[in-house]
Length: 533
Image 1: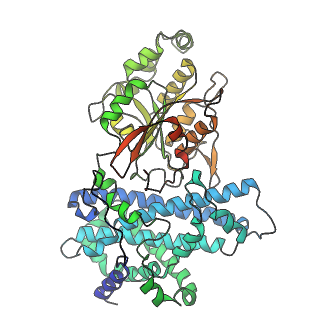
Image 2 (image 1 turned 90 degrees about the vertical axis):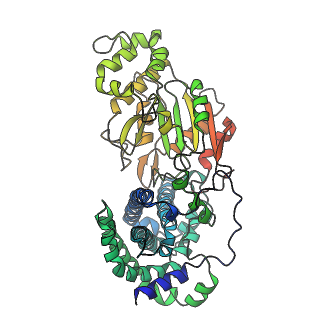
Image 3 (image 1 turned 30 degrees about the vertical axis):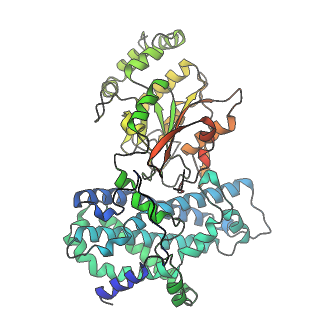
């Protein structure tokens, strides 16, 4: 088939729905261009590089979770006469939820670059090449890993009922699993795989000429795309007689070929308003952040969310990030240095320092020098958080100028809070833990930093936040911190007091301050549900 024929085949599949939704009214959030290809070349490539990292994380998560599921093959294929235990149910649901999360994050990238065929390869080779690479690599992974997962679970009534149940805390809507199985082998997306594979061969010179193949990570992704495509094609060929029996009817009657479930119909509009077009414009205003600072004290725990930053892929839940607020050096001194209990504890430390901040400055001179500096925006550093660059000191522009922000105050003594901050200083500089391994201190994920800083010990009451199993691995999604707050709310022995909640609103492009009652249930919001008020 010629390149022109392949283009025609893909464009046929890419036809928009017969009845497209009415355009949304213009707001502050949606007046920007709704197309990643409208960016200039430099901005487009910068976004494509970020999406490449997201795609690699999502596709690697799909592969690992599929392998994890197959290691428990007997559990997945158990007959209905042997009911699952609670622990087995938890393993099955958490693995499916993590798989769902990785699948959606991959599909988000696929939809963002879907229209690459409308960008001519001859006049805009770089955008065309990047768009094809990201779109087709995402599709190949979705089909290869998705069909394998669907085959593993096929025909198991007990399992399908379990996985189809809604799980708000995991971000699972009702019937997610059955709809996933229906769509992962959809004739439209399957045909896209075959036509895309043919087009890949003709496009390779364009990829090379545009310099895309020289980008870090691209050759590896290209190789993975070929492997995933081969695996998906093998499964599709086995399914051929059944899958394509109604091909003509599907292609003429079904308008969902563009979107692979589980990304919802509204995502077609959502993707146009991605973080690309809101870069530097979070829903929470800088003024709201600055107004919140006087109400905060060192030791506060924050949970944060940015809608278009696909962080912690594979850890399901609305809240993807947690941070420790330490305040400025002056605030730290005012909070702890004159406190009698803190002074008594500090006097027992090596060198018998007189003050808590004096101990930090002497024990961690390089870290203290960094902490007492300013960020790129000229703001004092006030936060310790684990980000992709590692455990870092950050300012409010990075840590709080986001889309959703919740602030909780541990109901602990000043000494316990000082101990937690001391531990956090110890962890600062360590790399981010992309494996989410809570049993190693060599690298830390965001919630792990908060959890280990406040972990109870013989001389510290700390915070008792149980780890949970996600796909068989003990970890702590940020959602769990909010779930604990909700479970203990109003009880005398609660571990947190509510400080503030700034709730983003995509529809109006801003955020409002909400109360504790509203914040309590945010952990049950759908992670991928963007139709929030």
